[in-house]
Length: 283
Length: 250
Image (cartoon, rainbow over all chains, first blue to last red; front, side, top):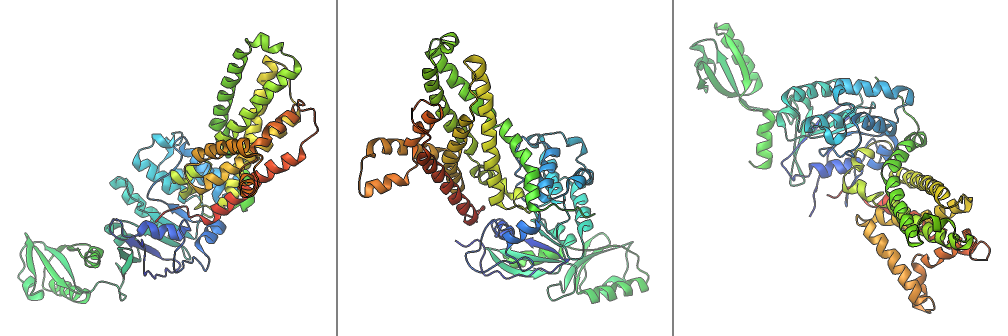
């Protein structure tokens, strides 16, 4: 059985690229191919023109795996020291780098704990911390917010935003479509090992969203709503769901304001990416 | 902030003390405890420490030869058991080899450091032997353990690179080799060649005896070359397997 098949994809420098797919879609296999832990039986994978294993052995990749596999008897601080040495951080810089990632990910109170004593969320943060010990050109994060509480999920997004650099590729595989919607410039949706489509969740390119549904909330009744958006249907008290493209939405909002309506909120009725995902995987 | 980087060789040299620490906290104590137990049983069999101390030099050397063989095999077995297979089995390779490190260089370093660790354990055991029986610190003892580490350890390294049941297969290989060399030493034709593909375990006793001066003959250089060469060939085959066998399964 082929875990990934008929799959062609190019990721540009400086891009935050998302990968979404249901369980067993081939995400982990694809990441193993990118790290050189698997060789393709057919076709090829290149990173900056090099075979993945050659690239990793020369430059390294900041990698957070879905399964945080670290020897359980290592302490958190020793774990970072070991991985920092292997990552090639100089002895003179190592302590400050470790302090920086410990501080960034709020692990200070756990530094002396053994890996086996860490909670799932702290283990996940340790996994992320070890991937950030060095300034890597390529960062691969596999289910990065798995096990994180809502506060750290949000912090994680801030961390990823701060990691954006010219020339750096950040590759995020996640079940969390909302997360990919917020972070990724493009998202590939795969199913049964095949690339279904590539979406620009916030862009206006070929893969971006056309007509879409939004919910508009008004401060009180306003008759202009049905004039401006004839297909609007009530979605709650002073709330309306409309379906239109971005240009029509903006023109309509302007018309509502011109006619004296007070808009209290405007939001997509569901994630843009979610719609693509449902279509792509046939749900 | 950009963290400066070391070159690859320097990285592994800096990491080597951590590998040594792993050995001295895990495999080293296991080896020490089991060998102390074996030595204690041998001593009890000879009538206790007092009797043991009074054994003639030649007899003590023979006991030492038997203990040395046990140390070399068990020490190597503990050191190389799971040396690669465990990292695969528990997925430890995922973070290790996302770093700019060659798995070949990494495991070759682990193999070398664990070998040095076994020599430290040998030194500790000889220290205890010196206190309980009589001082014996000939460098040839360390050389014999190092040789057996290369011979047995090379096989263990290959088996660990090839699959997860390395401990079971190493014991099986050594047992099969022992029985085969005992039964088929005079075979000819195909049997002769097949026999010579097996580890030359029948040569180990001669090496220990020569090292301890109980054989009455000179250094068996041919046997040493055969044992060492076999282990090194297996070690090289292990590196080859490591290079070509995928870490992950799809």
